[in-house]
Length: 372
Ligand SMILES: *Cc1c(COP(=O)(O)O)cnc(C)c1O
Image (cartoon, rainbow, N blue to C red):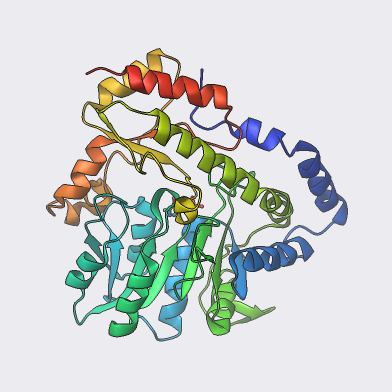
């Protein structure tokens, strides 16, 4: 069986260093808000090229509390419109509605699945105050154009970089384009902890300080509370494990890109549409870190079944768009044809830093053998 993502194999590659780090935390006697979190925050900020990093309990909280901080700082208020791609993972939308802001779902670009600057421009109204720019599947959204639009209309930009650790445009990494960015370190993400973890990064010191307080009961200073906050902290154990994983992120990303290029060159079945050109080079892939390798197939169910029969696991990211979820029943009547079509056709092939080239070849063979 070729698994979709072999987390055990990924972490086995770093087994001894992970054990050494866990031991260091156990023996330190200090488990929340200590040296490991501080060190990881510095290392991750520096990796992204940003000035501030605040560790959080998970990626969703990083997005929720950044928007909340902008409310506390008077930059957003209840009911403000926030533009977000309609085909994103639901967490991007939850972060908006959790803050009683109004998500404005826009259709993505048909090729990249990311925000399309033209469609964003059309969605801007006098009530629009922010954009959540999601770097879906590991590819940076067109951030230059988005930041130009944001400057023109005085909009805040929050990047959802949960799937795009280390992706760059012109050497500038995900998370360092907007006014702030949320990251997830859920185990299956490109930089994965061994449990839940997340962070926000920004170059705005006041925002960083506010988010930090909001995730620590609303307190900057022990027993003094400025805000009605909550508890969302990165813990020492996950921070120590993430410090190990961060050292290998670039090498692991390179493996993902090599697999993506092998798929692009090897998959010739006309029934399967690829996310990148057949002759893409590593340089072309600067802006994509292949959290997922997503193809489109009209007869998706048959495709998945045939691959399954050949021993290959595939997944769908995502089967139901946010506006068709029961959780958002007031949006169920919306018509977003491109988003709906994408959700009917996308399917993700196995990809990950512990996948062997032999398995990649086997996937290519089965994909090429698919017949409707
Ligand atoms: C994973 C993910 C999140 C949420 O991160 P968690 O750590 O699981 O809370 C948010 N946005 C996107 C696009 C994601 O893929």
